[in-house]
Length: 290
Image 1 (cartoon, rainbow, N blue to C red):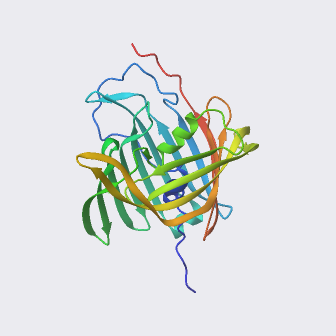
Image 2: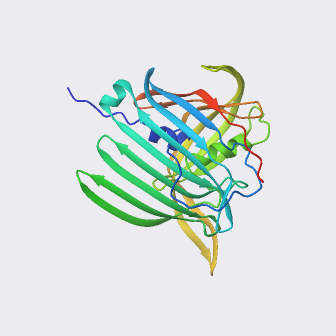
Image 3: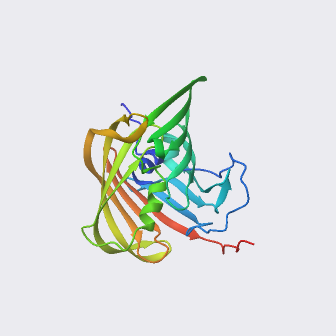
C-alpha cells in the first residue's frame, strides 16, 4: 500500500490563512520601547488544528511590545506550531517564525521562518524593502545532512505582508459589511500570493472559551509571478501575472468585539478539511511607558 504524506501542514495553513507559526523573537538587540502603544501588545493566542476531524497540530502566537531598532519602531510577532498525536507519527513537524512589523502600517520589516518537517530542515530570512518593491531572501536547507544556502530577491507589491502580518491588518479594518471585499499580498520567501476575501455573514462561533459573535470572510488564493518595474532610477509597482488562478480556499472568522480575535479558520485541500480553532487567549495588563 502506498502512503502519501499529507501536505495540509501548519506551514500550508499559515501561508494561506496566517494563524500558525513561530517562537520568541531573539535575533535583534532592541533599544527601549517607544512611547506609542500597539493595540495587541502582549497577546498570547493558542490554537488547535484538526485535519479531517483529528487533532494534528498545536500552535501559539505571541505579540511583543513596541520596540525601536536604529530609530525604526517595530513589533515582534512570534509563533510556534508542533505536530501531535497520530499526525506526529506520520509527519513530525516543529515550525517556528518571527515577523517584525511596523506598528503603524503593520507591514513587515523582516521575517524569519524555520521549518523542521519529516526529517527535513529549511529556513527563510526575508528583508522587505517596500519603497523599492523588493524582498531580499536568504534560504537555508538541510536534507540528509547536506546543507545548501541560496540568496535571491523577489519583486513584491508595495503593500506586501507575511503569512502572519496580514491577519493584523485585517483585525485593524473598520466594521465589516456583508459583500465587502479585501485583498492582501503575502510573501514569505517562496510563493508570492494574493488573498482575496469577501465578507459573507455575521455568525456565532463556539470555542472552548464559549460562544463568540464573529464575521465570516470567505477567501481564495492566487499564485503570482512578478517582475521588477523601473522608470529611470525610479522604482515602480512590479508587474504581476497569475501563475495559478484563484481558487476557493476557505473561510476565516474574526470576532466583532474590540479585540477582533482570529477565532477560526476552515480550509479545504486535496487531503481533506482543516480547521484552526482558538482555544485560549491571554493578554496581561500592559505597563505604561515611563
